Length: 305
Image 1 (cartoon, rainbow, N blue to C red):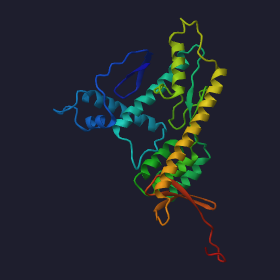
Image 2 (image 1 turned 90 degrees about the horizontal axis):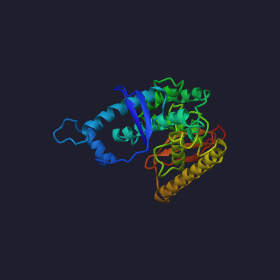
Image 3 (image 1 turned 30 degrees about the vertical axis):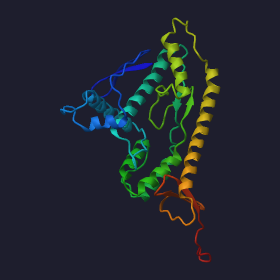
Image 4 (image 1 turned 180 degrees about the vertical axis):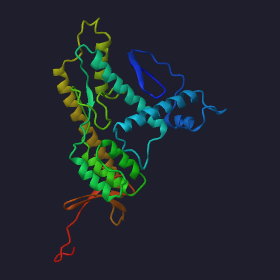
């Protein structure tokens, strides 16, 4: 299933349509190869045959990313290993395809059905607490909404305060989920969004592909749909529950591996305090991405420890 999108020079969508296709790859590039092409001028004598097209796509991806951030989309992957332009290029066009597909189903599906990828917006009451953290870290940005929160993250990137601020942002964000209602995706600042690009590994995408086929062949199928709203409810609940289990298993597996490396008698590890709650301190260790908590007691005149 292919999504064809027409863009102008400012990467504004002029139109799109979906088709069932057979794809012939003229070149197969991994991220490193694509990045080497982008690092070299397109008119270089040794430039790859795809150089001009890839540079053109990258220019459009930069425009898409800038507009998305201006609308309040979040990007927490700023350090220590920020994404390369080749990764960002693929990300932007995947996001664009997912958005177009959600719009297509709203417009074309006989029952206007879609399995949306949704994410709750951050509650307004949280901005004051996050602004206090930003002020404590001497961040020049006043945090009052999602767009300014992203600006604060970028202003603190590369400084000791970045991990602290990102930790508190992460504490405010809820988990994304699947829903048959159009609830919007707060983290991406998008109203229309569905998972479409990975049907061979995500069952949610396969469901979306079936709904697309309902829309594409609705006359032949006399308006019949592969699913009803009532049938999507247990499916979405099952997908959300399985995603929680998979994420938990992945985290625990990674945590166990890291503990085997570092949890030995006599080891001394450095870390940075990133969060504080009554009775416990959150510490980000320098040599691993694990967060650890350490209990503490407040010092009083009669209890100095």
